[in-house]
Image (cartoon, rainbow over all chains, first blue to last red; front, side, top):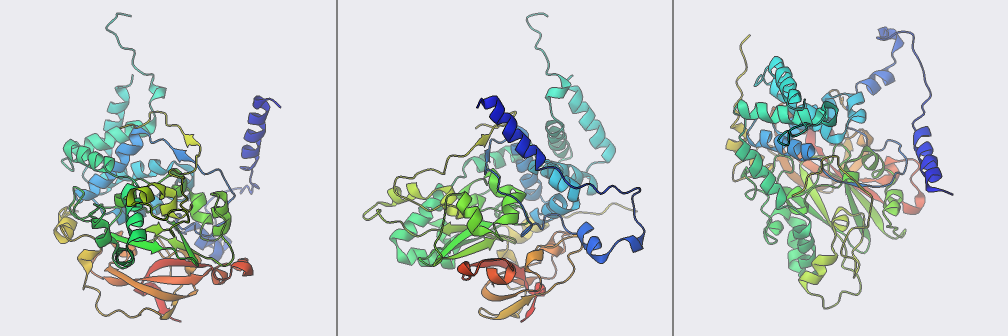
Length: 143
Length: 231
Length: 122
């Protein structure tokens, strides 16, 4: 068997694992009586509390660190060193406040980074407008 | 194009993450929250970290039963003897913000095998063990190790008999853990250096057992970075 | 509304040269539980944040160590550090935690830390 075939086979096995049953609702924001207590607890659960959930065996991987990942880690620790936050506040924001979708959908250090950006705004060290302008300014350096 | 013109990268070559990282760091510095020197100092501190001090702690404990008792009773005090000061070594002088100052050494016995996970995030004893591996941070490891530990350990190549109690340690608060495995057969008369060499990072997390001749973690796929950090 | 003032030196003043959680030593008062006590994990609300994992709720465990004193994470995450509690390392049987856990490995255990307010006598 050619390796292109094996690549396709393995890719297919990975992809079909992502198929989920689809329950499509006609509209969002249900009425209170349409939500059970169990659903309430599921929607409001802290996203990081995953111990004991089902999952499948996967290949255990190591990973090269990106420059931005290293810098993000250091920025988060230095913000705590200089008293902007404690690690525990960072975890609460980064692993729970981000919400279920970002929690599972974004890269690990992506959440660290978004959380570091937001703490500057939330604690009013920076206005959101300043952050927006700075992001725009940085992007323009790459044009 | 003139010979002095350097082609700029296309906008879609730089990621949103890279842009935001720069924006956050520059704003924090502009607003006086920290300095570039602070940032560099923490990078330099991170460069000093790795698994050897934890390995040496285990090797020393194998050779000295009194030191082993200290390791079990007072992890931070035992760490001092391998050159790790959980409070003062890092620029803060109050420990690292994320790793705190409460190391617990979990000593395996012939009947008990420990393995560590942080189900809630990826807490890890960085000051004595270095940065955590990618697999340790995955929701997958964090979901499964607490409930199917023997299955997960088998995936790492470790199968334990039914006489052994597998004790999963969920590192969910301020304590940080390393595992002190049992000293393996075939190491009689070994020096501390020789013993240190076979206590790998994977042994210290608890997903591997030390063996004579095995001086590195099992080979695994290393996912490459787009712009890898190298130092 | 005026802007809040943040004392950026607060933690450094408390913990420099001492460490964390060492800096909270003595603030929790008398520990409610001792090593060997049988305790039960309270199934209190986990709304907005918890570090007492869901999988431990409602289950009995044995106290194996009084580890340190600290504000609970649920409070520290909002910078509320006035109420310091004892943190206990407690031991569960895997067969109690998971109904499908094999009898062959009935001696397997799990150890994790829970703050005093998360526990009640078994």
